[in-house]
Amino acid sequence: MTTKTSFLGAKVVARAPACARRAHAGSYRRHATQAKYGDDGKYFDLNDIENTSGAWDMYGLEEGVKYPVSQEEFFKRASFGLARREALLGFITLGGGGAILTWGALGSKQAGLPITKGPAPPPPPPAEEEGASK
Picture 1 (spheres, helix red, strand yellow):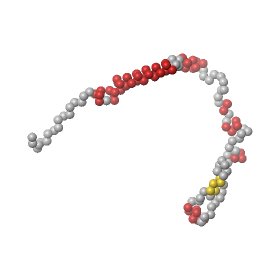
Picture 2 (cartoon, helix red, strand yellow; picture 1 turned 180 degrees about the vertical axis):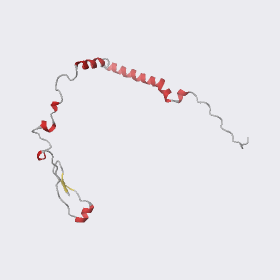
Picture 3 (cartoon, rainbow, N blue to C red; picture 1 turned 90 degrees about the horizontal axis):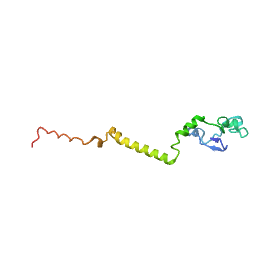
Picture 4 (tube, one colour; picture 1 turned 60 degrees about the horizontal axis):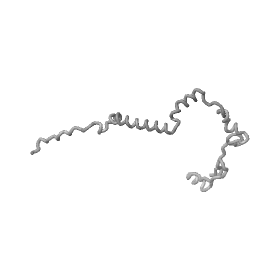
């Protein structure tokens, strides 16, 4: 069986299934598989890029205001303290340290860690059997 690849047009020989090979005893069928897309099998038209790939300039603005002025001002004010590297590292350090201390104070008790429960009571003595001699 011969097929044609979609990009290069090269012919590929494929063997027929075993039952077909027995019936035809070594003969191969040859045919080319064709796929059609668009006019005359064109996948991409370099002369008409806008209709082929879409009008990308339609969706975005090249220049101009992307956000309302009030929204831009809000985010500038909200992130002003974190704009410097030292301030950001200090915020992360304090936040991480606070999270560890909070977990140490509250989370370990809620998790039921043995160190927070205290010493366990001694186990009860084993029961003596009735027929045992001392």
